[in-house]
Length: 552
Image 1 (cartoon, helix red, strand yellow):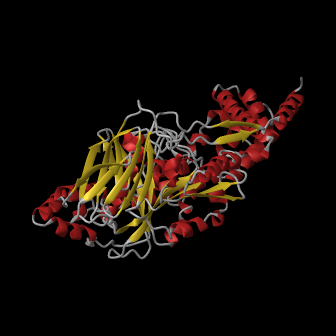
Image 2: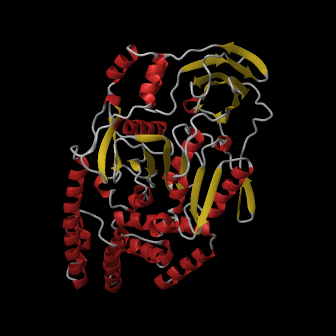
């Protein structure tokens, strides 16, 4: 069979595949082309590149078009080599070290071509310019003179001394009305902080100080989680971020004069599977609250692609810090544990935007989960906008409305009703209630139903198992000084008591599973107040005391 006929047959087979199969086939073609390229079997690699690039809707990049040019040259097809060189140049030169290409022995067969001379000349110019820009940006990000580096909120000794000289009431007022934040030397700039996770890992994160920042005025805060963490071997170079497409997604938030936190993720420290990565983001928020005047009731977290899925994790597992969540071209699933859709029934809303032509996370799949969630009481709103997986970058105006909506959402630190479920007690807390220990050997209560959505593809329906692990759940409500709790497969619970929610001059009554459990009178405890505040730097939810008990 001749080469042209072979290519035609493969293309015909591709056209007959379902969209999902075609997508996988395209990935396989590209992977095969790269594998043969590494083996220096350039002719075979060229065949795969030709088939892959025959479908222009699949997209490409300047690296694979460069590889395709090399393979075409080795295959003796100089015209295709010229074509791919021009295509690579039109996409752009995003590699700072052009010498990697200039000295590439594999490209020797192209180096007498005028197209190659033009390609490498422009590449060098742009590369030199990029290196200079990265150096300048790196210096600016590491400049500590214009930002805040320390405050008394990071001085535990100071606060212990204040507590020793104050009553519980005085300490609470000191925290609530704290407003002694230093003034920055300038505003409207990015700066790089680092947080030590353990003895072997320090994680970078960027913070954007908003325009017109006034240290006496509380500002809202957005946390933006970038995408593409699944196969990212290391943290991105921070110098790329301020001018990146990911950063421009947050333009509307910047116009609102809000703070922006941009965490960094990688394959082994990302917002899909690693609990420690999620915990680190909460530490980053706490650190920023220690340095700048943040409104505790206006903190939002979201992201694109894997980042949107990360925001969904927080909505399902650790919502207490946040006022609302958002996901852009995301998949609404928790990868590391159960996806407890029951937890979306609470006060904090989730907002999503999906592209109508998103191949990575097809709208039909996202909407099937979304519709099931909302039919079961989820506080969730998903929007569909025309576009593919790159929607927030290619058509930013179409997603800006979500930030106007988010800005109106104010956290209620003291919800009167909580419904909460977990299969991992590390994520057992929502607001004033925390599940400390499960009892999964017992039968679950009738109301503790498993929520598993059904997905339909190619005319076939199947449910997605969102509850692979046994879980425990509670339903709790507060009326006056009475706390009512219904439990299922839960053994121990902790309650965080605030004077803003309860009258500590009166007894607190706790009713568990319709039976009077305990009546007790609590007083505000300075040690508890200080311990909780130093962990979270939350000035809106002051924990006066804690109650821990076992359900029998």
